[in-house]
Amino acid sequence: MFGRLGAPEIILILVVIILLFGAKKLPDMARSLGKSARILKSEAKAMKEDGNSSAQAPAPGEQPPAQRTIQAAPGDVASSRPVNEPTDTTQR
Image (cartoon, rainbow, N blue to C red):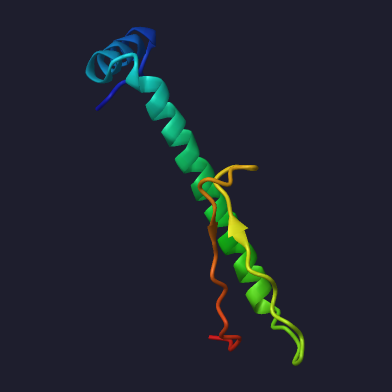
């Protein structure tokens, strides 16, 4: 249905995007897209670590791990937020 995109088609698409959004908005849009991708990646990594750590229940009398903070980027404290760890240790 759609053929392969060549150089003229890609250039035409880029020109249309620049005309629609303007050259001043494109860097801001790219920056926010990159920040969103970093947040998504860190959240996915935290969920994966939670899955691994929840499989290993702490021994009786052992203190629960300290509360973690997820950051959008290393050193970015403006958008960091604490993560509430589940207290239920039963296996589901």
